Length: 306
Ligand SMILES: Cc1cc2nc3c(=O)[nH]c(=O)nc-3n(C[C@H](O)[C@H](O)[C@H](O)COP(=O)(O)OP(=O)(O)OC[C@H]3O[C@@H](n4cnc5c(N)ncnc54)[C@H](O)[C@@H]3O)c2cc1C
Image 1 (tube, rainbow, N blue to C red):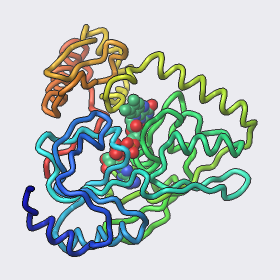
Image 2: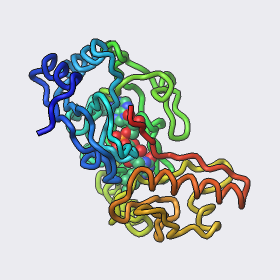
Image 3: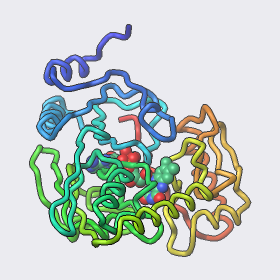
Image 4: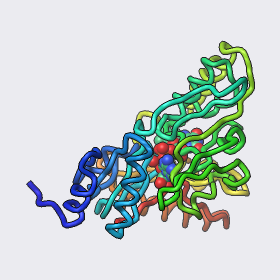
């Protein structure tokens, strides 16, 4: 068995009651199924445990990485030094607050949140049904689909800052724009979100979600590991159309390829490394730029070793 590093020993000593896995493969926690071992991966059960992990991280001079469902992350082949805090299923729970508002904890998946809203007869989260990430990741990314996005239904988010202090931020404070929130510039962890929705007939909401899911299955390579859209939508058009027009459907680097079903997706055909995916994205960016003068930007978060 591998010996504990100094960091692992100190972390274990400081957090004896928190579930922590050591040398845990990131590939097990990312939808790309890519990534070497995290030196430590913690699963806090509640906000007290999360605050304790942040305090311990400061003590150990470590800047922890935050992981939701790992559906928009490309994790490095070398793995992650230090601590990864995984929130999927940890910060769990949903409640109806009044006629039009629900509160959802950050670790709940967006599909579960959309189902909850539908059962409550509340419309507005239909677009989120089928986005495989958590509400925390969705708020961070301002996730969206089919004309809807998190930033247009969120009214309030509870954020824990790196010192463990909890702030309540409004939609305006969150500075949402296309696949962006203030959390990209000012570090903070989403604990929960309040959504303002519209009362409507549950049956109609479920029907709309079914329709959107059918569209997804028909157009997206859901049978292969990916992180969703590889590139952000450029101002001048759609990334998928530009990639397709550049003749890059099926273009492959190692085990990574541009999906033949949807040119906006980079997929893992089996055994792809982060290096393969990065090289694929680089070559696609260069070729599309060479052909159109439009520079694509990755939507997937590319994590580095430390
Ligand atoms: C098949 C497929 C389809 C997809 N379709 C869509 C789509 O239609 N629309 C869309 O927008 N996205 C889509 N995605 C991408 C992805 O699901 C979303 O971006 C989602 O919001 C990411 O959530 P996550 O929990 O997986 O975040 P992760 O991938 O774990 O993390 C993404 C970023 O959010 C940060 N983060 C995660 N949780 C928190 C938190 N609680 N507090 C602070 N920061 C946090 C992470 O540090 C990281 O920087 C798709 C992905 C796949 C695989």
